Length: 252
Image (cartoon, rainbow, N blue to C red; front, side, top):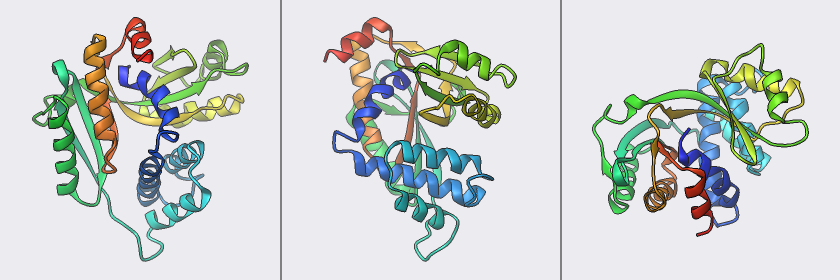
């Protein structure tokens, strides 16, 4: 699992507090709109929309915003918008591999913002395929630790469904699974009274790269710059942070 995923666990909790609430909400709304457009407005029949709505609710996105996003996405109303999903590849400081996933109604604007953020923060755009080959789509479910959500309880809950990995990340467990099994795993957890913080299909690198604290700071700065753009939905990387480096960063 990427170091960025570990870092984001803490950073995401601060996102609402540090003045980025509006941009976070805009990205959550886009996710809901696209999910509704692709699979329809029924949460029970559209698991992608269900997860997008759950993510919005857990991030305090108001219900009115959620309902309007579902209507727009499903083509109800005059303000329905068509978004394009675009993936850019790049190299960050010290050759760290980066995938940038955009959801935009203006391809030229998205490309310009991604290129600017990368060039200003020590990175370089990469040719298509030169970075993405090492990433695989995985279902990633984050579960906050509590008396019901223990390692044994999670493993028992998903025993019949099957998962790829269960990782302890301090305050939470992260379950990794095949994307096609993510809904079944999520449902199995809920059936056993185990709540989850998020359930997303992500790109996970098969070639993690250990970095020192200086490189990690540079890569995190680059990722923050990319995520500051409303055109960028997700940023994935192969950089991996050891416990010692993580402790050093948290003391910054």
